[in-house]
Every structure is written in C-alpha cells, then in structure tokens.
Length: 228
Image (tube, rainbow, N blue to C red):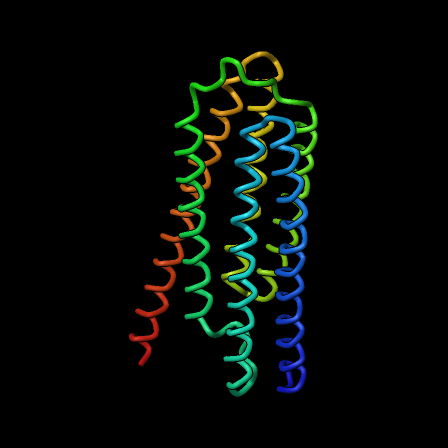
C-alpha cells in the first residue's frame, strides 16, 4: 500500500472515531435528560440512578473527544500519520473513564443504601419509568455495537473503553427494569435495591477497565524498553 493511500486510510479512521464519539455525546445527552426527568416524575430511584450514570457518560464522552483530538494532532506531527499511536493519550483517557465510573458507582451505591429503608409511604413507580428503561437498553446496546465496530477498525483503545461504558449502561438499565417492575408489582424496596446494584456494577466495571488499561500500558512500556 502506498504512503498516500495509507495516509488516506488513517485520516478516514480518525474521522470515523470522531463521528462515533460525537454520536455517543448526542445519544447520551438525550437519554440523560429523559431518564432524569421521567425518573423524577415517575418516582423511580433506579431510573434516576441510571440517569446519573448516563450523566457520567457525558463527562467520559468529553474526555474521549479530547483524547482523540490530542492523539490525532500528535499523530499528524509524525511521518506517515500514525493514528493508532499516541498511546499515552489513549491510556490517560481510558484511566479517566475508569475513575469516573468508580466514583459514579460508589456515589450511586451510597445514596441508594442510605435511603433503602425510606420506602414505606412513598409514591409507587409509574409505568413510564419502565418504558424509558427498556428504551435505554436498546439504545445503549446499539451504541455499544456501533462504537466497538469503529474501535476495532481504528484500533483505538479509548473507543474500546467508551464502548464498554455504553455496554455498562445497557446492563444497568436491565437492572433498573427489574427494580421498576418489582416496585410496580408491590415491592417498593426493589427499585432502590436495583439502584444500589447499578452503583455496584458501575464501580466494578470501572475497576476492571482501569486495571486492564494499567496492565496493557505496562506491557507496552516493557515491550518498548526490551525493543530498544
């Protein structure tokens, strides 16, 4: 492959990565607004917790866009436009997302547990919360598949992290659905238990992502040192 065609492919990969990150920002902004608004009006702690999770996604999406911009700018300064380089930026972005996930998960878990017993006289959860939670599952799973396909094609580790972040939302929305359904069936505590479980799942996924990023970064550093 000529250097010109290779250069064109790298530019196309960079543009694809930006489009994927921008699509995530748009979808998360819409979902976060709907989740928090309907969760508050429908008296669903589980949906509210999921909305807070999506709010954290927006912060992560912002970091992904910054990392992609920095890594692309750094790559353009190199010969051959090596888009998949700039490992430092990608590692920093992935670690930021993992820390954000852990912090969001622990805050959600703490809030849910502190209000776990305040379910006796509260209003029942409305069916609208269930509809929104199911829609979030479908939307986030679709986003996960789209971003992961772009991440594999562009070999971007920060997009892989962003994709798994979207998958974590789909999983937490499944838990929210179970909690909302249980509350509507006459077990009001189930919605808050679901919110606590969502927090725990978010924190665990953040830890797993951070540990994997750290190990991969260490392995690349060791390989680079050995190759010198």
